[in-house]
Image (cartoon, rainbow, N blue to C red):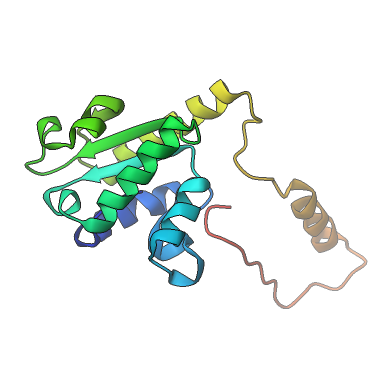
Length: 170
């Protein structure tokens, strides 16, 4: 989710709706909170879609400019299947750098929920087109089933506490 730090709150809402299993968001998914070119490259390598939040601030951001160039290269190498741009505020498609406007699906949606639903739909379509299994991550059904069996066994004592941890959205 490429954005300016000045638009972080809005993009954070989109990320929270999608979760870490479906999106890269610098403050939540970059290793050790690193915000450098290596972290950006590693994050992009884990993605099939590149999402740009085009605002006046993001189009003036050096980091966003680097992310756009890396995404363009990933698209040319078929590492990314699509670039999607959401224009906000006074930004229109004509304000976008030429190569982004010409190769990107440009949308204008206003609510984080609508954007997250659109992105989720694009992910589903991308996974279906690729022939990969429909789940973007490995499920833990067997673990959940085992816990349920252990908790419902009448011959075992009821635990006082149960701690479950993991990445949000996974």
